[in-house]
Image (cartoon, rainbow over all chains, first blue to last red; front, top):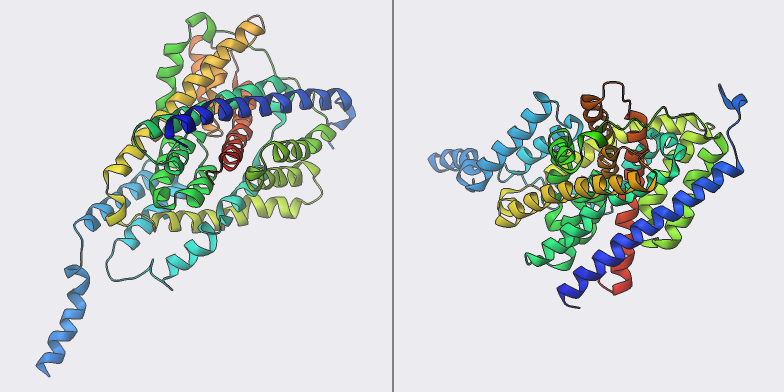
Length: 45
Length: 379
């Protein structure tokens, strides 16, 4: 594989893959927060 | 008799006679690193052992990096096997509170944007004629995360390890100098004044415990080649948040992290033999590393501006700069810059969220990169 193809692939798939993964994690964390809401009595535990 | 005396004296001056022109320069560089660590308090935990290792390895005929030399033994045991950066990651996970990030999960995206410099620098390194794996190792300086840079470069470009490590740790410590002009240039005064309010405590203990598990499983499934990085940082964090293994947590963030930091530092220093280090390539690596961190900051701030628009002006773009990792310096820089323009503005906890997002992002970016390389058959 030549360097140009490699570089462009890394730019697109690398940046896109990182952004997509972090977006998926942000969605999942939002869902987790809803599924397990914070309760005041947790304070001090 | 006289011959024996002459031979004996020869033995005493052999070190001096075998001095390569690069050795005194490198000993000077080692002293500079020690000065920065001791007098300027710049990353002393690493720069001190790196500086001393650099001095040790540039004294001729000691053979410290030859077969059975003690530095070679440490290097082979911890760097060649990639164990040291992974042990450090357990400590980092045990030290990091991801709470501010979990308060506002969309900040994860800033942690991703803060890593774009990795890929842009990789492309730049390729354009400058570096090989694919060398470009990968140089790009990963932009992760602004020492253990990640060491892990990737020791595995795929070990000849660049010393330059990449020195660049990564030096520029991380220079974040308070590098970032502010870029932040100021890319934002308006109105944007810098945006008050994001107080971070409320809304994350349950269950969510905090599930976070490392979810990141490990999802991240590992998407980017399996980076699972050692992800798995170790998340193991440390799970130990912290579970609260049931406080002995292990304390050992990870103190004794283990301290011992490994010492061994890691001295073995990185030991790779700085002048004959290999003083090359134009090293200078280019240092320049590209600087560019990587600047590009990370640019991308983070620009993404912060995008979030500002998407949220109707609720996000201060300055916190985007904290998405580069470099924990916790980058968050402090965002807080300080925000307060310059609005003394009542407390961005620190929001910036800490972006900063911890950057930690996850840097590991994830490296993991994605390695998996893409594997997918393309490059590794």
